[in-house]
Length: 466
Image (cartoon, rainbow, N blue to C red):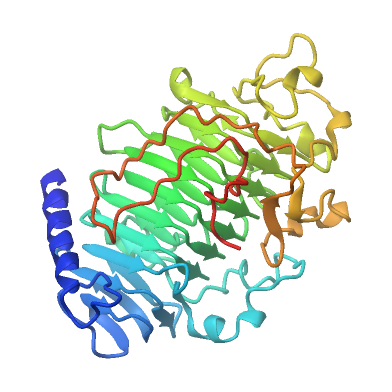
């Protein structure tokens, strides 16, 4: 499998270089060997969707094992049927840009965004992003032969739904919830950067193996009552950084070594993320984490902002994470209720308070505190406000706290007097698991850790949305 991946990358690089000699010399873009001429995708597809054009799909579309499908910048791929899916056995590449992002969503949702991407507080039972029947397409479902899934500056809105018998090759059983993205090649590469995810049925991304780069994305309203945002398992290595994660049903970033194949230990760095209003729709009261490492996985968790989330950083004792190789600290936690602040260090779990955390653990934990013990710290309610440029803290009406699950016109950059400025740890390095991919169009852009906490450091080198 590893040799196939390397040869595939070399071939893709040659294709990219050849594109510079075509009629797009002034603004060269990556291009697969053929151009898609029709406006509707169906059956097996390969080639290039050309910059600025709109395409449609209404059923399962397959990219075969030795084929590549490319979306150049400014492409819209709109579903006209919730059964529409991208089944990736080969390579799928979406190369939107900041100036010309790509879209994969439902036709009606794209044409009428005010009806679907709501910017007022919504009951989850009526919110189009969270309703079980509110999905416009089935997501990007990769098989074990997918060597590269590369998504940049792309809106992935309203994906999900229910698996049928034809999803068996992607590891689903009929009736399962579909992930927005499913990946599962331990030798493959998954890049998701500078993109947007809005709404899902369950996890936004599930990876069972792979070299992972998930960086500078904005994710809103993940799942109705059972779904993590970025959830990776056995033989997954990489980074999750500078993501703004708002209103996920369960966890924000999660790493586990659970799985049935692969010899590589799961290792994920989770740094400089901003987590807001997470975990409150989870059917499992213990599954409302911001960041989570469990079951033999290892990694680093630094420089994050945890704001009004159901629980804090979870380092699990059963099934146990690789404690000796889990490193964390320099994280700021804020809560508007006693229930939230009393779970900054989750009860029943093995997270060790760090002297670099905000608030300082010794200022509120009882003498003799042991990991996972119950404590009460009412003095922390409403304290350590991270001071976003525009977001209501404390929340005006506590009963509405969980409904602040969207970005809208809020601005999560740090104000000049934010206590999160300069409190980070920039002394470690990213895993950079996708470094073997060096083609100028395809390679990941890795942003190193920052001394400012959260996804939007003051030097402007973090999340680039808004």
